[in-house]
Length: 194
Image (tube, rainbow, N blue to C red; front, side, top):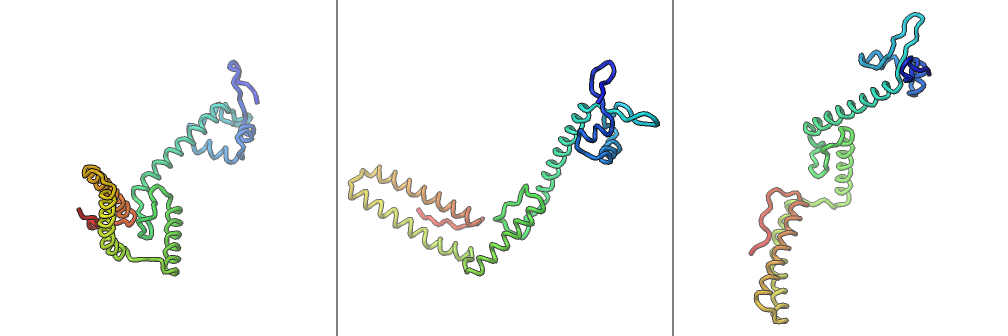
């Protein structure tokens, strides 16, 4: 490694730069050829060695790596907007996954479904919704009735009973909303009745 005359900045030849970067000379030649703006101090010719400023080369390569990372992120964002979930399984979150990872997710989802079928654990969502639409109103009625009886036994003022009742109704609505989300139902009848 020599210094550039008058500047004190280091100057390296092709062989030294390749060694410094941990690459082959062939790779270095490919980079110089690929990028017309590759920082070369002096191009080699008969009797003259190629010369490079290693700091400029390293800064150049870091900038190229950052450009490639930004391009990849933009490409992945675009693909995420265009890609449909594989296997028709809405439960498997695939947004932002690579195509390969989406395939793996679809395969895993299929294996889970096959295993559930073998074990007899799959149930029809419509049947579950029908059962819930019968059971939830009864649970609501029974819990509110039990609360009212307990409040009467303890001689709570009516205003307290009404506040407790309203809190129970709100808690039941929250549970039903959570069930709707977990079932993935888009249109579920109101299970709770006033």
